[in-house]
Image 1 (cartoon, rainbow, N blue to C red):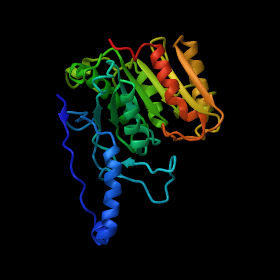
Image 2 (cartoon, rainbow, N blue to C red):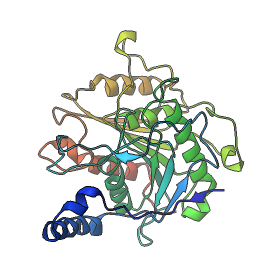
Image 3 (cartoon, rainbow, N blue to C red):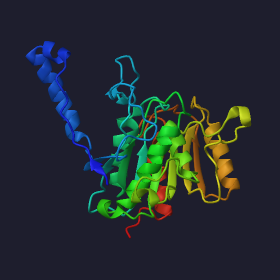
Image 4 (tube, helix red, strand yellow):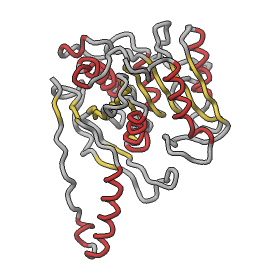
Length: 318
């Protein structure tokens, strides 16, 4: 059974106590204005009934690791969530008047080190809601654990998440056969690994784990780790494309430091397997823009992704 998490109010820090009342009032006013416009989940569920597989819980407390010197995206900061040892799913239901029965599990990126929680998470959930899709934000375990491959705990979390979503489909008001994934950067790699999974990477725990682990469609935005340069740009071992791999949408830029070959060679692999695939490569835009609109054309990718979903009838009410 899913366990709902309770939300706790943040504690006042020592720095806040030292601020003058006037400065503190300004800061709190700005924070309140930002919070008022932020989307909030209807529920947050623990993924696992107990301790996640192989979890030792020795990485320190979960926290925003953002530093004052970190870069801004579209002139705004972002939350870099680190030290995640208690994975969850947050449910953002589509508005009743728009809901079409589809759901998408969103996996933020961060190099399997942190999670870009708002840039590639809550902001994306808000966009999905605007097109009638119920969004499920996956908080998977980071950073990578020393004793296993970087993606292993995260893939366990992702497989558990999609099984739980399908098992609870009636409660969430969605169709269990219309559950997709959307991932950015490392989250794109995670979504691809989930899309090509042939078996569960942990022992079944309950009835939820009897549900299918493969998504019905995948949207991968500037994904990483999809091809290995030293292996002639073939996919890594954890990504085994077959004819059963779901339809896939890919977006990247030529100047992405992660290498645009990731999507080009992955597209060719999907094509050779007969998987319906749409690829968009833009000349510039770099990496890590989420869906914040900038002067670069690549940031119009949400429009292209919505067109693709619409053409495949995932935005139709059923």
